[in-house]
Image 1 (cartoon, one colour):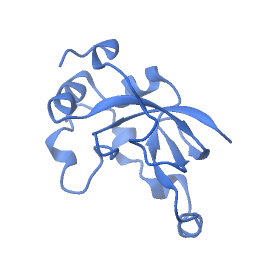
Image 2: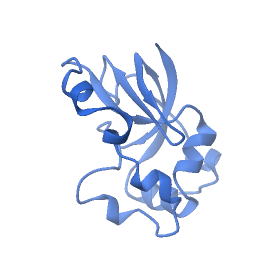
Image 3: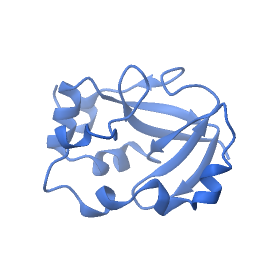
Image 4: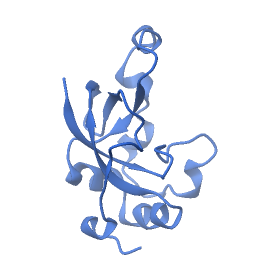
Length: 126
């Protein structure tokens, strides 16, 4: 199922949820649900192991508003300073969806064909 999705990423197409990095931008007062939900909560390990190679997979949101709820204003400011920005991408497949996120797959890397959005449209001036 193809869908438009919204995510936060750096120029390399990688999002900010990186081992050893998240502590640099996560705010302590952030909504608890989105911090504790992992990919393993969305899909069983057997499904993850069976994902086709050659695609790019990642987390995103269904709407810009949902993306704005996923990151606090303080976190958006920090992420902007660290070189991350919101984008709109076309997902080739939505593999899972929760209250907080979509798990999507694309044939292209996330930094190819993504439309960069402005943080100030999400209430952040960077």
